[in-house]
Structure formats: C-alpha cells, structure tokens
Length: 326
Image 1: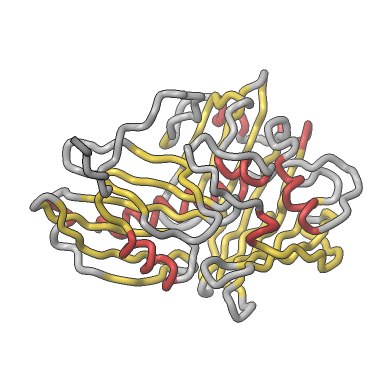
Image 2: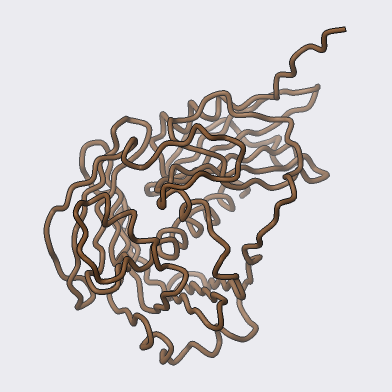
C-alpha cells in the first residue's frame, strides 16, 4: 500500500509539473529548439489558462481538468480527475515571484541548493524543431528533446505559437517509442481563461489543498543521508525534514526530468520487499539499508530509466563524516 501511495502522488506531481511549469514565451521568433523550450518559462508567472487534458500510458487513457489562474499577483492552480476515483488537488495563493526548481533551471539560473555543479539543459539534451502541427485547435511548434546520455528519457513537446503554452508532451524511451503522453484537447488561454464556468470553485474552499510555495531562506533540517551518485545535471530541488518515525524525502531535477528519494524507517516499511518496477513511465526502485542498527527502506521514484533509478537507490547512504584532527 505504501508503494502504491508513492506512485499515486509522484505521478500526480509529474502531471502537475508538466503542465504548470511551462508557461508563455510571448509571440516572438525563436531561433532554435532550445530557445523554444527554455523560453516556455519566460512569462509563466503571468499567464492564465484552463482546459481539459488527456493523459495516456500503456493503453490507459485519463481525462483531467486543469487551471492556472493569476489574480492580483497570486496564482491559483487546480487539477481534477474526470474519470476513475474522484481526486482533486488545489493550490491557492502562490506569490508569482515564487520560482520552482524547474523554472530556475530552464532559465539557466542556479538553484539555491549549495550545489553549483548543475548543468544547463543544452549540456544534457539536444533540441530539434520537427515542424508545425495543430493541437486543441491551435498552431504549435513541435520540438524533439533528445538526451545525450542513457540516464534520462527524451521528449517531444508541442508549444503553442501564440502564447508559448506547452499543449502536448510525449515521453520517449531510448528506442524512440512513446511511453506516456499528455495533451490539451480544449484550452482557454489568457483573458478567456477567466471565463471558465468552474473558475469560482478554484477561488474558494474545497478539494485536497497542497501547501503553497513560499520564499523561505531557512536552511533545511539536516539529513543523515547523502547521494553518492546521481546522473549528471540533477540537483537537489527540495527536501522534507526528518519526522519522528524516520521518514524524509528529497526531490532532484535537471530542469526537465524529476525523481524523488524516500527514506523510511517506519514499521510499515519494514515488510516491503526490495523491488524494481514500472507503472507506465514511472519507475520505483526500493532497497533495504541498515544504518545505526536501524532498518531503512530507500525508494527512488521518477520518470527515469529503471537502471538509473536502481543505481541511485544503491548510491544513497549515510553521510560520511570527516575525522576530526586533534
């Protein structure tokens, strides 16, 4: 049950990130595929949009309503599953100056993580414009994003020519076969997004509300764990403090791909077997580790190759302290 819970939440987070991180590039000429992709964040803080998205993986098709509304310098986001179990997540009141990790990396700026060994996207991926297409009744530019190593997957993205909103994203495996796809089938952008009939419910209470992004310069709670290997370009973007049961989590991103690491010493984790598995394009790699006579479950979850996730899980370990010279 615990693994299923992680899958559900990471998958939801991946969908939200794919939609909400990418915003407007303004209606101006772009000279390359790299410019198109990195430009998607230039005006994401001021762009409002709402619509219906389809999400497809392994022959399964889901439909989701999404909204990202900007009012008086604050952002309001909503994602509502339209089929299967009822599920809705709402985020209200984010300051438009509150930048997420992927926003910073796509813009070529370093994260406030103390790790300056990040790479620019062009060091990790090649970007090729494949031509023009039509998505949700709108003209788009199609860009193929190809990884330069085997540690991450590639993408095909369709970017609205007028607003810069990403209207389609296809995750591609190393054999150039699609693993999952999301795309808008109906979308309202800009002022027209303020007229959607279900907008009032976004501004009021209801739904499972997530914490808003906050500008916080307080150093995170110290972790007893460190990543002794991770793919080039991935940096720590966020982490949760250790709770009384010994649970903590860390999220890493290269600006496009994201994976999370969960450290769990709770009783419920002790019965979980070591496993490597996929649900759609999402992989989970779980291994057991012992530290200070305590058993831990170390789990890596993300849309990365299984071999990458397994290597990351094995490389997680207690922080090695340097001896003190007396």
